[in-house]
Length: 104
Image (cartoon, rainbow, N blue to C red; front, side):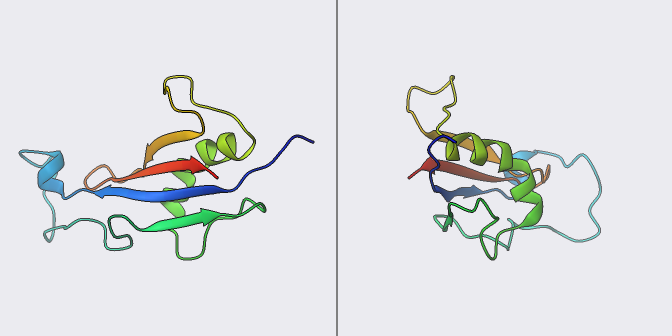
C-alpha cells in the first residue's frame, strides 16, 4: 500500500446568509447567523486512521471527505499550483463554511 498522510483542516471563513444573498431565496422562520459549530481559523487534524476529527460537523465532513482522502493518499488537485492543498465548503447553501485542507 502507498504512503499515507495526515491532513490539516482549517476553517477559512464562515458566511452569513446576507453575504451569500442580497435577497434570501426562502423565508426564514428566524434570522440565521454564520455557522456556530465552527470558528474562523479553527484547525482540525485527520490522523492516519482517516476518521472524522472529534467535534467536526458530520455534514461538513461528508462534503469534504473525498478531498481529504485524496490528499491523505498523496493525490493533488490538478487545478491548483500548490501540491497537497484543497479548498472545499460544506453543503449549507445559506451559510457555507469554507475549509482549507493541507497534507501534512
